[in-house]
Length: 146
Length: 334
Length: 128
Image (cartoon, rainbow over all chains, first blue to last red; front, side, top):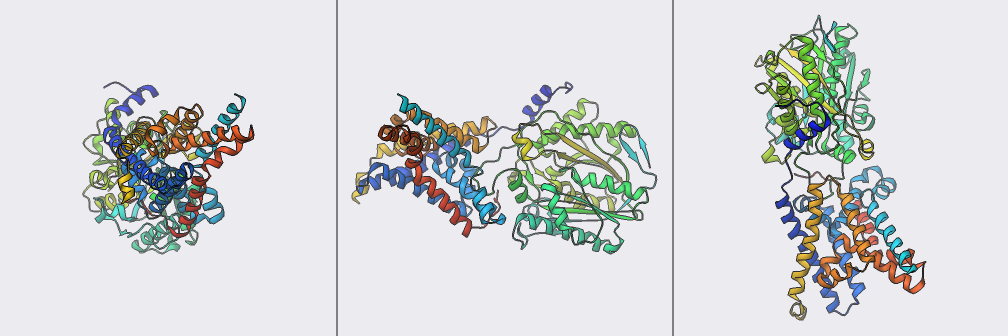
């Protein structure tokens, strides 16, 4: 066996010895859970439209419903199990966004409601809003030029 | 007491480990080592309001337990060396604030247990103390909260991730006693091989363990076969394999007598702990619970205990720094 | 009953597949790169806002419905779409108003439910 002297050689050994994530299984679970969450959203959307709701309002109802479900599942300690099973399947849909706001709110409750819950609520989701909103403003500015 | 070789200290009147105690959380109580611990908790809060308070209570009760087991009183304890993973060592600070024992807060990340033993044994050997306590604690939930994500966040742990042990272990080192004795210590250097993956701590710490291991053999002139057991702290499955392979490539075959407390603590398949246990409490509880009794019963006679630590925090990780490792070795003989 | 009869099953299938495929992309990023979940969410929302701004994402929404709007890329696209529409109505100022306005329901709901959850729930350890 060769001697390990440089960081590069060590990095190679570490890669060799570290087990990889079971990517096929992970992708399959992410696919069907993520697809299912979207399908639930579609059924809510169809139901709103069927009852004569306007398209953009119906979309908002879908978002709020999924966020409410996700917040509920997070607070009864179920969402983290779904997340462990489905990975990106529950992270990428809007449910993951809601979970990333609700989970620190619960966790940092012991540091008080103002700086704990209020202050830490956006530790994970804050960047999403910063980059999402900033990008949309840039898009809007560009659109106003053309 | 004298220094031999590069960084080893050899004791003339080896301090004895008078007593050891351990308390662990419920997940550890489901693992293969469960029957060896003094007390297993039923829930991670232990009646407290936060994870941090619970961890303080665990180390406090472990220290009380080791004192009562030894038939000493807290007045007989000259100093306590204690540490944990939380910022500014708050678990130990708050856990021991009412103990009325002079206190040294020690930080060496997960290597704190043997670091405390190194410091404590030098105190005893130098006649600066008759009895000292060395204790460490860690808590899965407080560690996750500080270093990673809220517990309710739906994330997947990669296969190389380790599970922080909830619990605390404490030992009393004494100038009197019938062993096991700390015969020499090899405090380690900081070693950084450029690993940046916080989910692969075993790989980050293994080079430090290797450095301390080899230095110990060179300084003392001992061979791996001198020891009945060579035990690292929390390299886990990944780090353990890396260490034994690298030790072999340097001419030290430790395959037959080497094991890791992170590997011993959990049942990998049943408990879904991925690469194994970690945290200050990992080696502290496994040594106090299992190896100390094995030594007392003379089932093993010579053990080299190497606790390993990853010297990082979330700020250094966010700034893109790599993870420096450290390892301190303590040679214990009956 | 009437509602169930009105369901477009093919539409649901398209929604399931596209939603699932977007999640697979996220999973590959999770497993193959060392990106944290927060970074992945940022990548998705930004990509969605850019594709939405270019008008490409609308095709996906037309094809897959909620399969494209429920993933976070849809959230980003919705932000961009709102900004553009508002710019058309009131000019430059719309860039600052339209995006958040269009997604205000989701953001407000997440904050509100987060607060409510912190009142009632207690942190708990993951069993695995």
